[in-house]
Length: 151
Image (cartoon, rainbow, N blue to C red; front, side, top):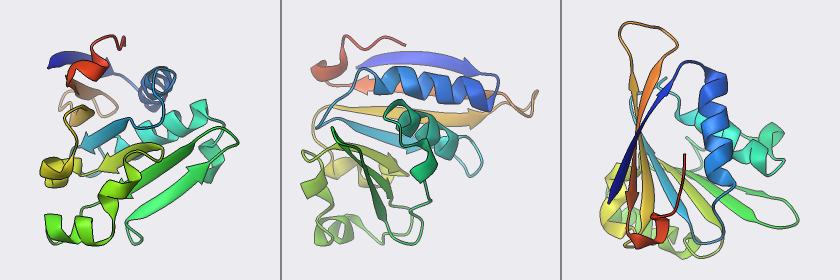
């Protein structure tokens, strides 16, 4: 596992980091986003989608569990698994069947880690107490698949 620490000083920084990461990913890649409410997960997703020209499409999947975004080249599945009762519920909705159909971004993904394949990217967001706009991102590149990712 490779670990990268990144300091974001603004929403723009977070979005730009997400765009850079998006430029290196393709179908079958999985990103899990963890962190308290308001820590930057949605802004990251906005930036990620903007790389694919989908920035105006985003809506929170909080009540639908998964939203699908697509352009003429790729599908992106944006999950929010916070409200799932357990891992069995994730399997019951066919959550794992999305993994090879597009890029998956999974908010609160730590709740379903046992369902994930051997390789995925985990981004853990933390607020910085000294600055309202600063976020600390701890990025874990899990598995050999992501050893050449640069941020």
